[in-house]
Structure formats: structure tokens, C-alpha cells
Image (cartoon, rainbow, N blue to C red):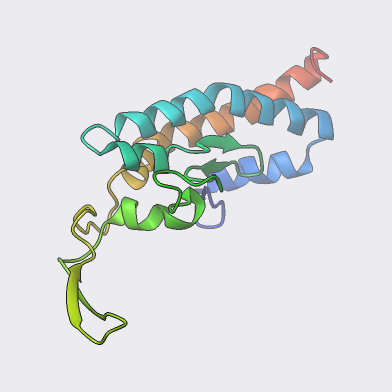
Amino acid sequence: MIKLSAHDAPAELRAVALALRAATKEVRTDANKRMRATMNPAWQSEVTQHLTGAGRLEGRLLTAGTRVAAGNPPTLVAANSKRAVGRGVLTPSVDWPIYEFGAKGDKLSKMKSPKGKVYGRHTRRGLPAFKASGHVLYPALASVLPRIAAFYAQSVIRAYMDALDGKRV
């Protein structure tokens, strides 16, 4: 789960978070509804766009449960399903980091059979190469985060203005 943090954000974003915290329940609900309705498709399409070139398993693993969850500040959720994918051994909410960041090298794991024979398996061959900045979710987050932060501020201001005008209270 990827979450926007207002603690180390610019002063404007911290002010928006404080304004939403001080708002009435109707204003908070309105701002959260706007946020989810507009930014859910943007976040989902950005994750899907960054999946080009990745395998089918990565797509099924990383796009499960992709959404913008309401909150102050909102939470960007991806790979948040507990339903197993593939052959039923990979769970997106648990196994997403290995497909997002990859694995280092081609590790040879030595194992012993019940009869005592030692044999080796290349356990990381089918995984993507290691990349500290991520393959799909983190690059998608970097490209969509400015839009989400700007719309977050706009939706809070719009919710306050509508409440003052009496449109949505």
C-alpha cells in the first residue's frame, strides 16, 4: 500500500490536510467522493500503462485491488488482494515486492533429497532483474503523484466552496 504523507509535504499540501481535518462530515465526504471518482481511473490507467513489457503474472499480481482509498490524505492502493493468482501460490498482498523490485542474480539453491543426494535449483531465474526504484508501481506513482496532490487540494477547496454556496451540505 502506498500512502501520501502530509508530514514531509509542502506547506500548501499540509494546509489542505488540516483544512479537511477541520471540515464537517459532509465536506469531507464530498471531497473524498470527488477524489475517488476522478483519480481512481487515472491511477489504474497509470499502473496498467507501466505494465507494458511485463509478463502476464506481473500484471495479475500488481493490478489486483488498484484503487484510490479515501482518507486524509488519500491512500493509493495496489496489489492489495488476498486471492491467490497463478497456480494458486502467489498472493498479491504478500508477494508483490519480488515482482515490483525484482531479484538479484541467479541464485543456485542447494537442496538434499530424502535419500541424501545434493542437487541444485536456480530459484530466481523466472523473476525480473533487481531495480531499486521499482518496475511498475513506483514509476507509476512518480508520474501520477503530482496530479493526485493537485486534485486533492482542488477537491477540498471545491467541497468547501460548494458547502458555502449551499449546493452540497
